[in-house]
Length: 427
Image (cartoon, rainbow, N blue to C red; front, side, top):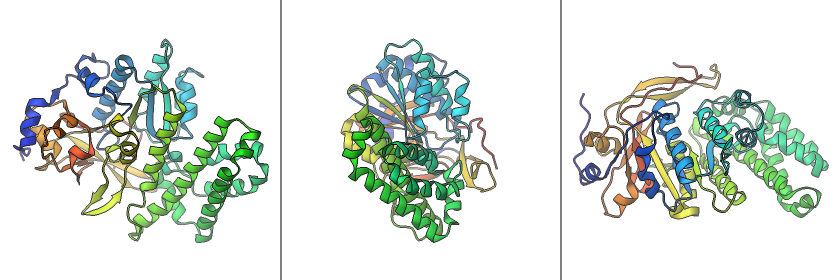
């Protein structure tokens, strides 16, 4: 079946304004990315997306763009769709702590979403750089797989600062241990099987700890360092957002959830990114790697029903044009459909799914019509010409209906996509 063509005013504009790129390989020269220098002038946070995790071409292109932005444009932070709490030891490793081989231990048990090579690049860069590049985790603990990565260091903090609360923190830890997993696909069903009294007790304990943290801030600061308090508070907030997300996912699976209830995770990611910006140098510039559905600037809806307010919407509201969302997609190839399977190591398997031809009206159809292959488009420039842009973009093997020119500031399209060689069970 031939690919759809999309002869529209936007497609005509794309013919004349799309920027051809030469390479996907991160080892190739970076000169073809030079147009990004002007496009991102004045941008403080550039988000690099992907229409699906586990896609080789997206992993490679994000690596190339990271190298270009660090080496040629002075970006100084890599933020990732990775736990806020767990990010601190990775940042220390990226600054040169430990040995090169320690990274495998740091990432053991985490879903392989393309973090290893960016971290290795940062560590190599930092070994000779005058200005080091930092790493920042922004997600809820274990991306929703466990509350323990946040609760364990919070409990250690309270042991020193407010030992009266230890019984509460330890009680929360005991419940959290009973359903902890390596991913949300493992932990969410296990949480749903808890007795309602345990679910409610955990939520109540976390809420009480959080309110006490905030109420007694002057006392806590008199007993410890301000930065330690800030990190511990953010970790506790992560546990609270994670707990809320378990409830939201349970409602999603049973069909009786509240509207857009899983947005709690995206809000936490946005606020974590802003937290890092507030704690970094005033001139810090951030490369942010996350799924397209997290970085887009407009609400997400399926079949006319609002399902989420993404991180990118909050970041755009906070940063304005200093936030740039660059979505990555492909008109052809294969994508990774994640199928729930509690017996699999991460609670899901990957289904290597062929992509159907691009739908008319999609950004993929517009790129296919150019015959460009590998290229990108500055959608901010398109907006200045009042074009009616594409109304949909790929989300794995389906389409998300959204005004693409409003949702993203730029799109990068690879000629095809393929499943990366990752240690995840395949269907």
